[in-house]
Length: 78
Image (tube, rainbow, N blue to C red):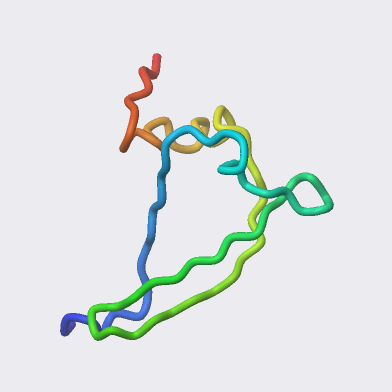
């Protein structure tokens, strides 16, 4: 497949610890937040999409992937 011709993929975002105004703003249900992803591709095209995502406790995520979130900090898994 030629570079730039792929139509699907995975994007992973990670940030340092959040606090104050850097915390995700909750929706009225207090269980979700809005997420806008904007990506510029190799040809200069800009792709933007809004999602509503459910907030999940970090311990719950580790049940499915014990190595999740180790880009910035290593978690020691027993």
